Amino acid sequence: MNKFLYSLIILFSSNFFSHEFNPAHLLIEEKKEFEYEALWMTPVKKLGSSPELSFPNECDVERDLPFRQNKYISERISLKCIESLKGKKIQVRGLSILNDALVTVNFFNGDRFEGLMNLKVPEIVIPEKKQVYPTGYFYLGVEHLLGGIDHIIFVLGLIFLISGFIPLLKTITAFTLAHSITLAISVLDIFKLPSASTEALIALTIIYLAFELTKQENEIRRPWLMAFGFGLLHGFGFAGALSEIGITNDQLLLSLLFFNVGIEIGQLMIIPLAGFVIFLLSKINLKKHLKISVAYGIGGMGFFWFMTRIWSIVV
Image 1 (cartoon, helix red, strand yellow):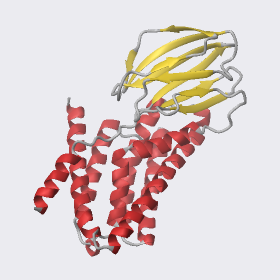
Image 2 (spheres, helix red, strand yellow; image 1 turned 90 degrees about the horizontal axis):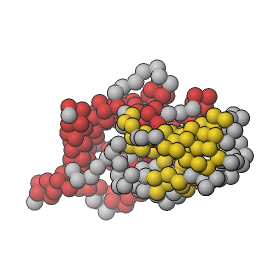
Image 3 (cartoon, rainbow, N blue to C red; image 1 turned 90 degrees about the vertical axis):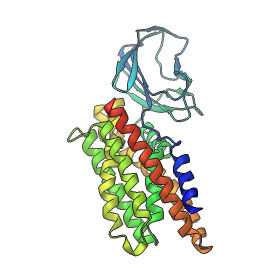
Image 4 (tube, rainbow, N blue to C red; image 1 turned 120 degrees about the horizontal axis):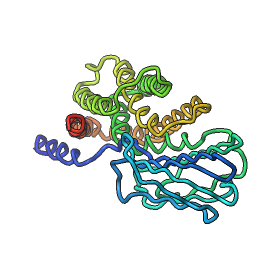
């Protein structure tokens, strides 16, 4: 009966998909006073209908034919406005619940604005005042962690793997430190890994974590070391698409910092809830049974993701 149940878990888990981090990006550059050149990048693997932009009525809009650019379909747009975009509204229609749109506006006088649009907030008002910090990357980090099922699964697996607050804190800290290092190394162009290969390797880390979950707690040695090693891979995964959508060079470090802080906030939102559930299960002696079920479920998802990602590389 147990084998039948675990087989069902693996079968249904393969129907889940990981959210590959490919937000849309609208980059607007003011070339002359009230004249703008925009680049609208939407992911090739769209989830839902193709997103459409709406600009202020004060602007004449000219669009070029879309073209393929890595994982994105890009479209160049020219805007000739009778006044500044500051204080004006930009809207997007057709975003999926799993895709956000980062908006970056660089003005002729050096001012900059960055914000985020999504399904719940499909419009953005460009502020009159200069924006000091690139807070859009903070929200992008939070959205990415909470929408990235493979990263959430790995963090949840670590929580199930470790007993005790201090060992869990050490393990999560090791994972955080590791992906922060490789995120910075990749975005700063010191060293990079191919995005598709990285995503496949991340799926392998999930499979290995599932295997570790089948062990007795006294058989698990130095989980923080495993978390650190696998965190290095996850950091390259975080950095892959972040580099593709682009970061303004003079705010590179700040954008990177805000994005990474957003990822950590996303993790902190998950850990207490999952920890509380595990605590309750321990009190009623169900943790052991659920742990095995989680191991099979995580393993099934990891294997499914690994095969599909390898297939995308080969094909």
